[in-house]
Structure formats: structure tokens, C-alpha cells
Image 1 (tube, rainbow, N blue to C red):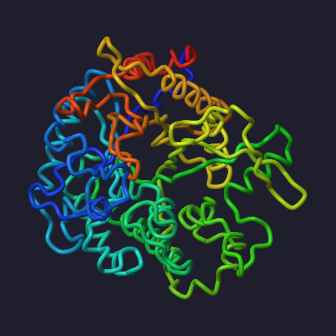
Image 2 (image 1 turned 90 degrees about the horizontal axis):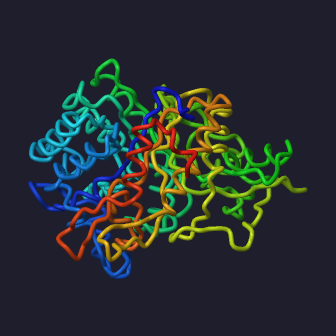
Image 3 (image 1 turned 60 degrees about the horizontal axis):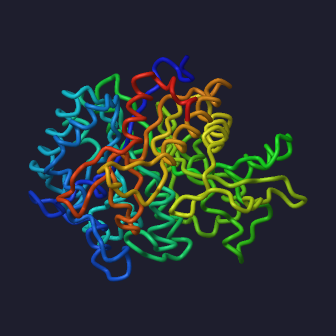
Length: 464
């Protein structure tokens, strides 16, 4: 007996920059990642996505692997600079033609496309115009959304405006570890986040106006949910508070007291039409860029909640508010040093639905980074990845049984892709890419396990 609802979607995901390659092909414009990778010391061993998995030229081979698996759904991203080289002005027909071919090939294979408009590869020309700091980008992103909405009307019926706005801003413009590698002042970080969320709202309006009536629109949020340290009501309240809100008594002289990684600052404007009061009060001096109507634009009606969840924090109620509890000695961690926390797929969706209402919840990314290598039999055996997905899926199913409207789970990633600043050393894929052998595709054990998950609609998940 399956643990999952009848219409639950099992999918997989990748992003344009990480998989396509062909970084200058067919009049494509440069992205901030094309530029960032050329700066020494930024990417592991100086690697880049110039070629990546060469999906641009080998997409038919990759879709054939999806079809052989029986994959019902694939989450991909459109490269904005491939479609519109400068992010404004003329559109590139050759770039649009590529996505025409890819979408048609997916549909012919019985794979439903879930398309993300922006997965971090900002056109470099926009960076030189101020990027998300520049309010003009809001209308430009809306024009891009309108173009693809019309072009793919009836063929793409699941749209994701933004991938992980939190990581886009905080890792790219504050901490500086991802493209474009900036370290803005705090007020400029808030301004960039504000314009990014406005761009989301503008894109939703454009997609609603141009897509088919049955099309669904949402976004996906990077979430490290809080897991209560015990079953006590106090710890559960503390975990929810830590996940969405700032610490108690934030101070303007200590910006770190206001946690910009907390989900409330990013998702409250979208789902509730307002910033969290505590943070708004503390950061008011920085918010002179907010104009009438901005929050209304951000808070467009969405059809689903999209979450990317890999790991979480353990939280308990302390005397002065929520406290982080260290993971026990020996707790399993991934190659990226992320704790393995299946319960995140129960508590994250539960807390989101409790705060924002009962919208369908998709996990659009979840996965385990390993150092997969072929063994002498020529295969790639990855039992840890199978155990990871089975455990996380079981917890997601538990949330569903307790009333969370779970809608789908997308394995990150289908192929071993270019993992941003970590290059190709961290491998998440169901299919191995052999960079020493002409990018040969080798389905891993997890590929065949997930094939069975799809065929049985998750009945084998209880087997681990």
C-alpha cells in the first residue's frame, strides 16, 4: 500500500547553468556565473559550467534516460541570458528554439515540465546595471516572464518564478560565496531582496495573463526547517518561532541579532502581504526604498508552496527564547557537511502550512552529496543515497497523513551536475557523469531504485 496520495508527483530536477554547458552558443548572453567562474579561487579547482554535462547538445539522450525510468515530472530552469542575452531588449530566437525542442521532447516522452524562470544565472549585463539593487529589473523580469508565458502556453503548465531567493541574495550579495560574489552593506542586501520579491510578483502577474487557464504558478524557497528537540509543546513552539522569526530583542547595533535566513522575512510578504513586525521595527531605518504598492505586488495568489529542503536545525525552548541544540557526536553528515535530518520533511511542510494555509506542498529539491565513483563492474553503487531519499520520503508521507497537502517530491539531481562553487566534486545525481570518458552517462543504483518508487507509487519506500 502506498504512503502517498494518488496524484502525488515523483520527479527530479536540474538547473540550466549546472547542466547545459554551451555557454556562448547561439548568441547566448553571459550570466553572472559565466563571469564569476573566471575569477581565480572562486570555484573548486577553477572549474566552470562552460561545458557542464553538455545537456544543450545531449538533451535527447538525457530525456531518453528519464523516459526509461518512467519519470513523471522534471523540474528545469530556463536560462534568462540564453533567452534574452542582456536581460532586456531583444529576445534570442535560437535560445527560445532550444527550449521549444527540449519541452517538446519531454512532452513526447511523457515527462511533465516544471519550469523555473530564474535559477541564479542573472544576465551579466543586469549585474553591471546594479542587478537586484536596480528597481528597473522588476519590470524587465516581468517582460521576460510574459515572453516565455506566451511562447510555452499550453505546453508548460507548472511555473516556478524564483529558485531560493534567500540564497540568491544572502550567498551572492552578503556572504559572497556564490555569484556575483559581492558583500553589500546590510541596507543594500534588504533592497536587493525587496526588488527580487517584487520581481516574483511581477512574473506571477505576467504568467497569469499569458499562460493557459490550467497553469499553476508558485516559487521555491530554500528552507532549513527547525526540528523540535522533544515532543513538548514548548519545544515545538520554539522550533516554529526560530524557523520564521528573528531572535528576541534584536539590536540595530548588532545586525546578526536579526536572522535574515529566517523564513518569515522572505515568505511573509508573499503569503501574508507584510514583513514580520519584529524585523520591520528593527530594520526600519534601512527600508527607505519601500514604496506604496510594493507589498501588494509581492503577495500575488499562488497555487502551491515549493520548498527545497536538505537539512535542518535542532531547536529547544530556552529561558531567553529558542536555542540551537548541537547534533550528537557521530550524527551523519553529507559531503557538504550538512546533517542528515529526515524529520525536516515532516516539520518543514507542517510549519509552513500552519503559518501560510493549506496550499499543496512540493519538495522541489532534496538530495545527498557523495563522492560517487564507478566500481570495477562499471556501475555506481550508492546505497546511502537510496537510504537518504527513502527516509526523507517517509517523513514527508507522515506529514501528509497528518493533514499536510503533500503534492510532490523532486530528487536533486537527475544527473551529476556542476554544484556551483564546489564544481564537480559533490555529486547528487541519480545518473553519474564520467568526465574522464566523454561525459558518459551511467545510471546509478539509486536510478533503478527511484524507477521502482515511481512504478509502485512509493510502495517500496518502506523498504529503505
